Image (cartoon, rainbow, N blue to C red; front, side):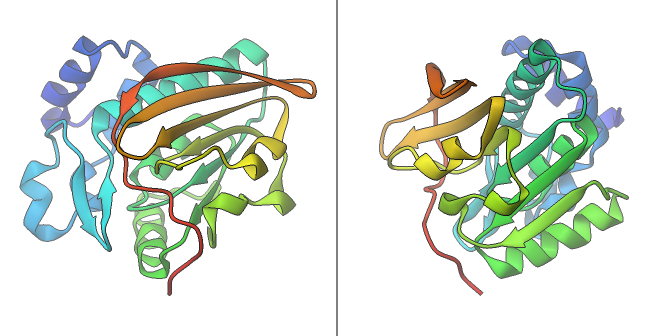
Length: 213
């Protein structure tokens, strides 16, 4: 673990995330690499930070919480080679974390310039078990599914039904839903039915349909 990450990891642990594997992964990735140069001094604060194009690098606690929930579900279902879909590559930090936890990560980003930068960072970190796509996150990536886990890093005004349809029989979807008031939902597939629960209140940028160059 990076020495400079220790205070942040302790803060996340105090906030209730106790998955030490997830915490070690987050603490081993230099968060400053995913920020504009003017903000690298804030890399180890427990805050979301702007990365341009109206997007943000998610709060470290939120990255840890969502990653831990996803990992717990995969473990409980006994899935040996989990395939994960991420909606909203953004800076690539969450993607980098997921690549250290799961077999393969498919990630969609609607803003081409952010996708380009994320790919460069992931290659720099020697991450190779990922596939990136420039496209509309509302539609998912049906040709690569079904997915054992889907994680959405932007808030949808309503639940994207296309994402539920791309879950494997034991898959789960983690997604923030809402506009001014947002809640993080966990949907779990059980055959042809879905059960869901609210995890906690969150604050994400909106999940916007369409794509940008």
